Image (tube, rainbow, N blue to C red; front, side):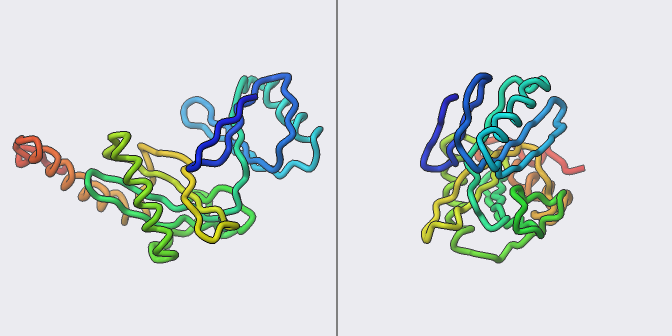
Length: 198
């Protein structure tokens, strides 16, 4: 088992068979081919429960997976969306405070106004990352550890195909995208009038 940690993400453990696991609690997410996702979130009670669970996963054909520290974050995640030169943010807040993953498809609500200082902090970190990685279009999910008085955002995932409800729906998303594509073309001396939003 290998540990990977940076100041901007939870500690992650890469698991291989015949490894004794001694860390708790953790969240496990298994993503299968064709975007079928099964999520298992557990606070394992003992060493044998943990080992037994991972052994069963290994035998089921999941030949390697990643676990990461469970970070209490108030059952909410900050979604930061970068579209060209524009950056938007909103919270995804789970109705169940015990829920580990806050997703709109599982009942999380959207809040654009909550914790404005944390939103600004998250937007700065995400924007900085996108500039360094040369990312023009993505949704980035961040969490803030509850136990910290001045928390730094932790990066959970980057989505290139993402839900648009927090932006005002698909029509609004395409309006923003169209505008930013036009700006991108003009910055390169190309004719933006030749593109159409249909």
